[in-house]
Length: 225
Image (cartoon, rainbow, N blue to C red; front, side, top):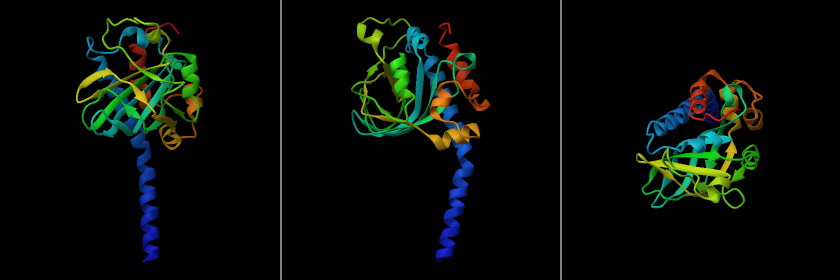
């Protein structure tokens, strides 16, 4: 009986490893779809100046949550930064855990999009793990193509954050959530060891599966490299 249990456990682990490249690719595709859907609503989307000035972007499709004015619990997403071919690096897979997302009503899932707006914020993103809040607070981002950077806070924000739930897209205050690289999925996605920092520094060629996300991100950010 014990032998059979060991065999079944090893088989399950092997199957999980076999599915990992597909799951990592699906994560990149989901992030691309979220960005495309948000950008398809020009009057309610992200202002051009945010896209043009952003140093990095983090997209977490379907973050699991629950409750009323909820606490976000767990999500998988991708991060990418300026500096690779075509202006943007390949995506690094990331996980986010804990924390809270403001201005959300209802349970289920929420798409979260973060824009890192300066080098200090990017330096934090390149680390093995960081927490949103305190020194690296995520400020609710403005919505609407015509929205301008009306305050010094917006102009000097390290991170601007957004969320979408039940079709409603808005700026959102995100506090206490930790963000860390997903090394196993990065290996699966790139077919070799690829660290979070190597990817976001543009030192590793992006996989073919990420080209749609990279080209879309470049299309909506026209700032000169």
